[in-house]
Image (cartoon, rainbow, N blue to C red):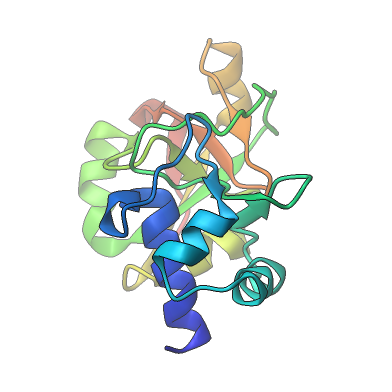
Length: 174
């Protein structure tokens, strides 16, 4: 299995379907490294390599190294222990062209995930959007949202998270 496929499989297990391999995550999304290795073809060295080389920093080990989890992007209910933070004035969201009409009508919805994912810069949002075809970028009035009572969190890897971005806080920029 290629490194990319190995990382995707780890993402599937830690973010969406731990039951696929019989793994149990705790309420904070942590899995026992030894148990994960026992239930899959992963070994400790492979997991360390995935965590170290992942440019998006999707995964973390616990301080003692006995646990591993995905930092965000879960579709299963876990609390990854994020502190509420005041966001910057503007954040960005990248998507595909096919989603623009719905977003303009309904805003950004978390869909199957626990949160809407937002980027601190246009380039990151563009890369995200490219995964969905021709990229479209929305500017999010995040500080205004926060001051209006919406909660924001930032994951370990710098992704900004919120539960919903109503359309009136959005501007399509390209």
